[in-house]
Image 1 (cartoon, helix red, strand yellow):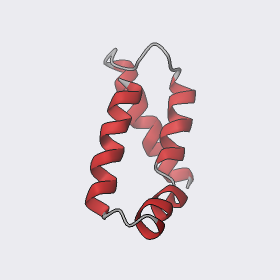
Image 2 (spheres, one colour):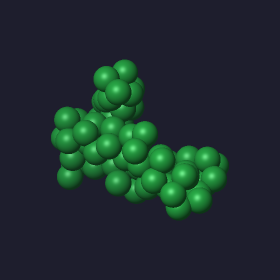
Image 3 (cartoon, one colour):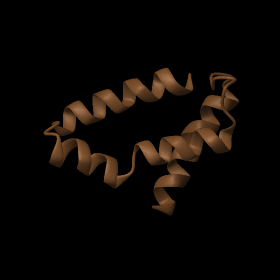
Image 4 (spheres, helix red, strand yellow):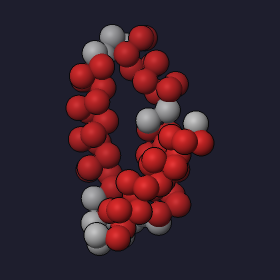
Length: 70
């Protein structure tokens, strides 16, 4: 999970560097939330327990991340 967090941090830092990270977030708090959103537990809940397809999961999480952080 540490590697996943580092990837999330890199994405959030890129938004921040490009002045696209919403002012509501710090790099650290945005990284934390993105990391939690993309956790295996969240994926399991949505795909295995709620029947989302992997494609739905990817599409909806990407949309939510954009709305949340940009």
